[in-house]
Image (cartoon, rainbow, N blue to C red):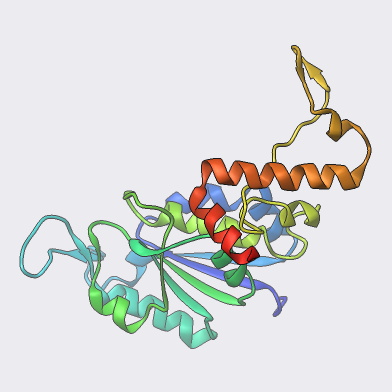
Length: 236
């Protein structure tokens, strides 16, 4: 076993939702290259009762079911007894918004636990005692945290050295410099009368770079004025 590789443990009540997204494309290739180890853990395996229940009704009444303390504590404590974790993340709509900067920071870590919430949520005592980061992927509600866990995993793994064959393409991605990416074109130069900008066909790399920087700034200004304002303030 390569002790230097990143390890991501994903805890879920429905681990079947995680399988396909971890086997293909960049994440799948990174696993095959030995750059990252991704393990999924079925929360039902840590349930206390015969029927392997992981949820119960909320104190005080109300709709929905809450994931109980016992199975989550049992699973995370088992993992923590085996290795040190740099982050224990709970995926939840009321967490802080996940962005490229956070992906960059997580990609520098060695061991990460992702807890995918389900049902109405998890017992607050789990959040207060075990969780180090609470992350949301947007202002909307999903059926569970499995999809956000896959989104977060993909964003992190693709930043690992060697995960993407063309490392320069990662550096040019949207948000890497605080701006959206510039438009891209490929062959043919003329498709149904739609022509690739002449400057991109000029062979002048300095001018191409300037054009892309300008287009990146203008696109961000129009589509994400919030990002543009942040970027502009950093330039001053």
